[in-house]
Image (cartoon, rainbow, N blue to C red; front, side, top):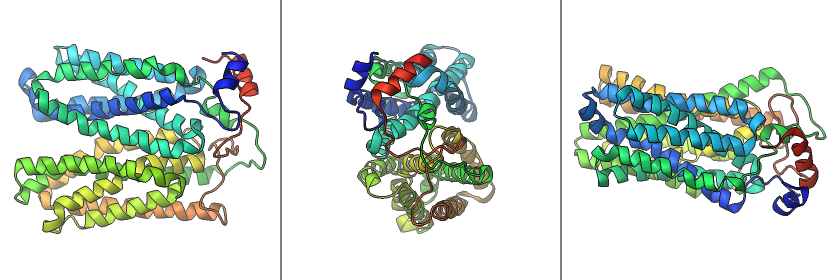
Amino acid sequence: MTDQATHDTLPSRQTVLFTRGAVAASCLGMVIIGALLALHGPVVPALRERFGLSESTAGLALASQSLGAVLGVLGFHAIHPRIGNRAVLVWSYLTMLLGTLTFGLSGSWPMMLTAAVITGLGLGGVDFAISRLFLIGLGARGPVLLNVAHGCFGLGTVLAPAVIAVVGPDHYGAAFVVVGLLTLIPLVCIRGVHPRPTPAQIAGEPAANSGRAPERRLAVVLGGFVAVYMLHFAVQSGIGNWEPTHLQELGHGTTAATAATSLYWLAMTIGRFLVAPLARRWSAATIVTTACALMTVSVLLVPVTALTPWAYVAAGLCIGPIFPNGLTWLNQTTSAAGNAMAYVIAAAMLGAVAFPPVLGAGIQSYGVGALPVMLSVLSVLTLAISIALAVRSRRGRPGHDLPPLTDGLSGAHVPAEAPISATSKMSRMSKKGAS
């Protein structure tokens, strides 16, 4: 890419890494990974019948994909600075495509588990890369469009089960193949993603008033975000997995319980879209702590039998904004350039995998009536830690909601809209070997 071409496509006043077409294609990528996460549950009966599996063994496909996603987040984070923005997305999409096609076409259960891990590797890479690059590569619109992108992820989780309901679980192979082939669309649009600067290179730019944040403080802050993400994902996945069981225990029919759970996931998606316009007017810390507070209130209302289904829906509405706006808050505290975002997203995925079985063990020991109590404890802990993070942030910079933006490693200050001279920036990048 020539300097003149770069100047024509990149505004010099701020970092812009995506064309409009690439933004839309990335949102489709988020729909795809949402669909892949939601496809496994509805096809468990078909997998059990075809391979003669127990229900827990059939559930290993989703567990394998989730494990792959954690490894994908950490792995693609590690190579991102070397290969650039465009290449990290290309390899993530191609890995996801290979995994989904293999899963859909394979007739061997061990091969399908391997394919699920491969799919997860690409899925984790796409989720992490898009979340990270939207924050630093779309200027002031980044926090807003990050909410939209994760709202699109939610659309995928809603649409995939609906498609399986229409075509039938026995056609799961075709469903995975079609979803996999959809990744060709963002791949075709990948040239709309600028290969450089990467987040690490942006943070490496010299800036005035930069200072080295104490490592202990960074570790405490990162630990707080990891805890918030693990715990709120525990609540999110706990409701998604066990709400139908709880509602049926209360006397609701299977169809009504399933419909209520679908409404819960839909509410979570709507919550992200509703908060998107607020992301430019409210601080991310305010959005997250408010959402955690309302989530806690909603969960505390679950034991009220007459309100139980609606309390779950309200909880979904409040849970939705936490993930994307928590990433914005994290970026404003430690920056997307360091390891923090990778650790936090990986922790969220681990929470979604680890906690549903823990809640299941509690239900098995104490009955399904213990579910609201366990969810309440998790919600209160999430709220308490988010408030502590907000208080610590305000103390870190008197008179402001958040401390200075740092990369979490070098302490380099990173403005919300980092000024970039496109010509000089890309000229430097070309000397370093842009992808």
